[in-house]
Length: 514
Image (cartoon, rainbow, N blue to C red):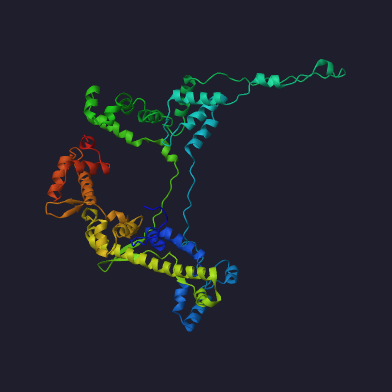
């Protein structure tokens, strides 16, 4: 075979995604607030786009006569400030109401103090030595957000000793050596003023930190507010809070101190037998623990309030459920007539200018079409969900039917990934509350009638069964299986246990009340 360069022609098929297709997919994925910001950004970078204000829409349908009538009405409604001032701020019949009852004030988030700042302020009020303050900073650095001490005393001592040894320390001897004394021969003979006595140097405590010092500082932290700060486990945290409430002589304190494992396991009878008391008294003492805070430091975490703006609205009008897009706050875009007419005369533009105008004009037209396509796709998906989940809107979550993305995609004639983007991070406001669109999709379980039941609906039924059970005879997982079977739901016991754990429901043994 002779080596060299050769040319050959081949024919093959490739599937490449248009950049505009990527942008259309991003538009489907964006929630309402993100889409509003995106459109505002497009208004800044594309001169062919302009926002259609509500006043512009009204003005398009008004005639000259109606516009003059509107202007006269506005003049009549204008506030006569001269009349208000002369009448002692009592507006006349033609003045507008200046009360603030209809004003809407935006909620201003309040900045919360961090846990370390709150504790440091209390430490500054205590009479601590410089050595103790350095040790307290090491304690603050080992506190978690929950308020627990996430290091042993030995680790804290080793950490501060390693840091102290790694730094440079200036001792009083060094300062003395650095000073240059004045020889007696060079001192003026006529100077008879007595020399001022030197201030005594502040004593410097030498030596590494000890575990005993750490134990003393730990007791200081245990006395700070809130109670339970500096605890090393849940048991110590509860004991500190009970001590702060002067409840050391109560049964609750003794149970936490002496039988904490049995208390956590709800083994009331075993505790009662060992102590020779009634099991009901043990349970009542354990109930007092519910008033305590197991993680006292979390109250100082900043609370990020997340406001949900629904993308869709479902309302029941005359017995029928109607679907609307909540896009009143979204900018309405249109092609600017000025720039469109300017782009129509292509002869006066050449080179890069013509390419820029053509690109921006095509991009503006495509963006308007893509937004409309997004609106129609969301409406199609929500209409199908409403038709499929009508019993949920009428009766509640227990009647939620199983639904998958594939089913919706097949009905509306789109790809499953498209439906996934439409439903991602989108919310709908319904007569039963605000839900994410993903809420209406769940797997199915077989029923005795051959139909499918939604897993989310089954979880709701389990929660209702547990809520209605007798407190002294809670339902076991096997009994829940039988109760669901009577309702036509075929489910395994291990599946009931999994759903119960997802709902945060304890086993029957730990739910039993005496």
